[in-house]
Length: 98
Image (cartoon, rainbow, N blue to C red; front, side, top):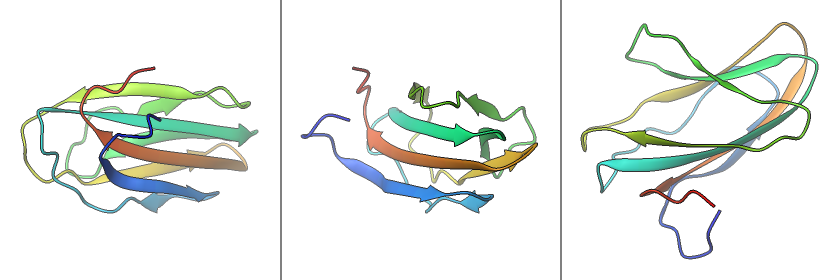
């Protein structure tokens, strides 16, 4: 994550399902940094959308993705299934791909 990025959700870590803090992006794009370790599967889902959750690669591989959206409140959650997995997620404003 770039040092000068505006943080929307500070780095958060857990091993279970968890609602991330709500945020409103100040641009029409934001970047999610995520990683996980363990045998379970981890995905990021929109709490307000019944669509498919977005998987996070496990085994120490960092997942980076940009989300293009309107400047409206975002309510995301992390979902863990299929076993134990430890995950980390941070969200920053703008397109901050490495």
